Image (cartoon, rainbow, N blue to C red; front, side, top):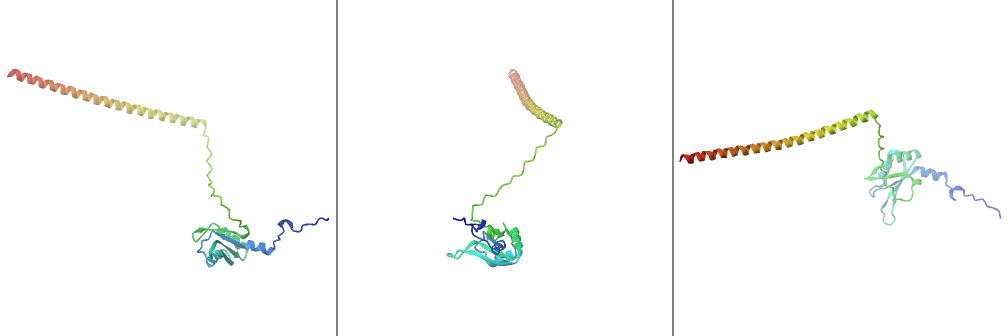
Amino acid sequence: MPATRDRRGSSGGRSRSPKRRKTEKTTLTVSNLTRKVNEDHLKEIFGHFGKVKSVTIAMDKTAGLPLGYAHVEYASEAEAEKAITHANRGQIDGNLVKVEFQGERKAPAKEAPPRVVKAPEPTRHREPVRDRERRDRERENSRDRRAGARRDRSRDRRDDRDAKGRDHKEKEKASDRKDREKEKEKEKEKERE
């Protein structure tokens, strides 16, 4: 049996005409639209980026409500690219919309959460040995000064307590002297009587 040659090529049996490819490059899909957005609204917005040939909002046939995406067709590929550049991740009626070429749209998949990009940690500058030694000496001197200040405060508190104790003792001695003097005076008065 002679081998037959498969003429389908690498596209899997479907040939794409140049017209179809050109339409894909000039037609955009705008997704994440609210139900309030209409065709005139989209024509006005996307008209800023070039000549809009047509706008079609996808509708649910049974409910008659918008599905949340639309197709916008431009006259040229450059205008479509300009619209993608400026309108993708822009806001329409309060929603962030996604604008892409119609052929690039894939089945809705869960979007990955936004990447958090951390700033690189600054490289640590190694200081010369002399500077490190000087810094260490200063740190040690500072500790010594703080320790000395703590000792001084402690000594001052102790001195204050001692002074208060001396004052208290002196007051006691003074009051004892007064008491003794009063007793002597009473004794003298008794002797006079």
